[in-house]
Image 1 (cartoon, rainbow, N blue to C red):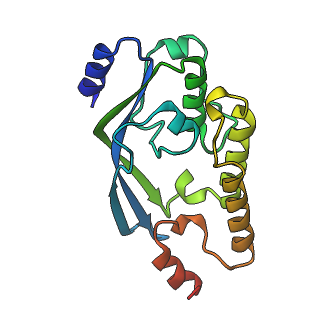
Image 2: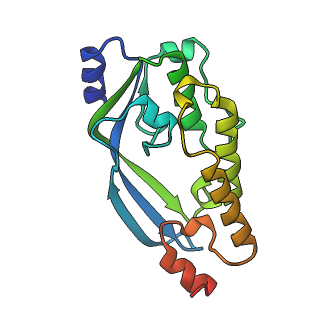
Length: 193
């Protein structure tokens, strides 16, 4: 992983930050923290990802996991926004992209496996639809005037989508987000059939 990233940075020395492809494993655990099920998926990324894809939510990247940037980013004061409950990794790369629009590099190789555990006590299990709604709203409000955000189509569509899902959850009409990738268990546990 590191040697491949270093090779790319040496080949393209003017690049400041990079995101590689990845594989993902999503796991579901029961209340006793026993693994119930899992799914594996290859990175659904394109052969070439542009910085515009990241601004437009067209590249599902593990932004924080497995991403690379030069130290100067930190030295220049670009930081993760700790006020954001979700999408803090996405925001970090939007900040870098604003400062260095020509500094992005996509590494079209799978360099890591992204593991998400649902049903435990981490953020994946505890995030709500409302958290996602607020997260998309916060990202848009913070970056709506960024040049690379021009032409995006995810806002307000995704804000409305997650607001509606939260309303449906509150009304008992849809399962909680912990079952996003495992709807068959939500139907059994919540009698939604």
